Length: 164
Image 1: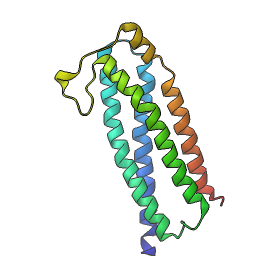
Image 2: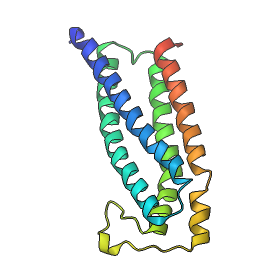
Image 3: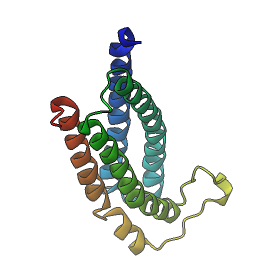
Image 4: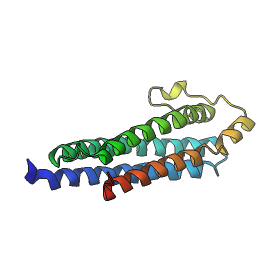
């Protein structure tokens, strides 16, 4: 199994690239929404982001499978850096989910965007123009970007430098 170690690392890095690319697309959309004023444009951007998030989860799955198996094959689970990276990944994911999900659910409802578990006929705008403006200009995308960036930078540092 040791001879497959480079392939597991490859899968891990491939997953990380897919995760980062899709997540980056979703982040860019979140910043573009801040400049949008028309509900139809916001709905379209939210739909693009939703597709990117789906791809992001596939990348995350590859990242986790490749990373855990590479960690086992490479005997890294006896070192602190891999545990710190896993804990930080989980903490970052939980924080971002808790910050993003209620916000984007409110924004979707405000512009009548279809949620994953909702039929198009059920979607109807439910917010005044003033409330929509407050949602669209929220600093939530910047907070999410900061949380994700800090998590990413620290995890990358742990993986490359293996400090402990």
